[in-house]
Image (spheres, one colour):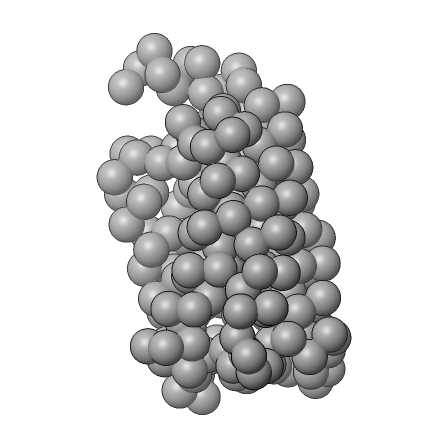
Length: 180
């Protein structure tokens, strides 16, 4: 898959997920995720690796966002039946993010320090933008403790995902680097 298309599709997934959740259409992001995943996981040499990385990212995302919800640091729009549990729309963001690991985010995930820095800064920033632009998440006041906790959890998540990516995706990344 073309890295640029992979990047654009992952950004569109984020946009549709946060927009949909905040406008009573929580199905919008997951519906696009199904299309993105079906396209990404069509038979290719990286499909198995992509699937393994999705299966690792899903419980990581469940832990991060359920911790935020259960602690009261964050309240998600369209939360589902249990407000203390990460909603489906945000879990599809985590699994969609995993679909970038062998593709548009491959460089980042192969360098743990960059991956951790991305998590510490980019994780809270994306939640803050989702809150400010669409109201798909609300933080407890004051906001800085929630952003700090998100930064620590996202930094840790990116360290773990970087390790998983290097372990499970290294052969596909080596082949992909040669071909692109």
